[in-house]
Image 1: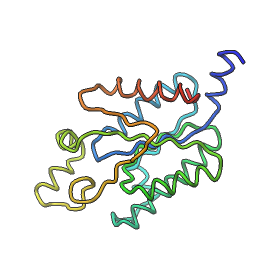
Image 2: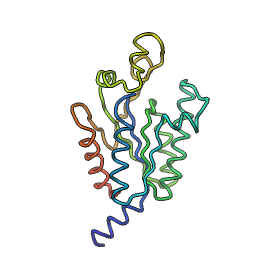
Image 3: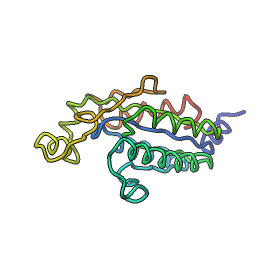
Length: 188
C-alpha cells in the first residue's frame, strides 16, 4: 500500500473524536480549528457542538444528572451513525459524568465504530478567566448554580486516548497536537 493509498483510506474512515472538558476549556474552538484542517485535506467532517445540540436535539432537557446523561447519549447516537458512514465527528461536549461517556463508547464499540476520548484539560482557573459565556461570573454572583466543575461535578477521564494541556498554548498548537494524534491513528 502506498502513502497515497493510506491517506485515502484515512479520509474514508469515520470516527468520533469526543472532546470533553470544563466549560470554556476550549473544546469547541479546538474542534472547529481541527475541522477546518481536516476538511482542507479532503475529510468529511461534522462538528456536533454541545450548545447547538442542546438548542435543537435536546431542547427542553435540564441539567439534572439524568437529563445530562440523555443529552450525551443522544449526541453519541448521532455521532456513531455519522462515524459509521465515514464521517470524522468532532463532539465538543462537556459530558461531565464518566458513565455517560462510557455508554457512548460502548455504543460505538458494539457497532465497530472508532471512538476517541480527548480530555481538553484546562484548569478551572483559566476557564474562569476565559469565561466565554459568562457562566463563571454568573455563578460567582449567585445568579446560577450547577456549574460543571465549580458547584456541580466533573469527572475527568481517567484514561483518555489523549489529554491535551491547553494552558499557555495557542489554539493552533493544540489543534496541531490533536491532528498529529489522528495521523498516528490512521485517521488523518
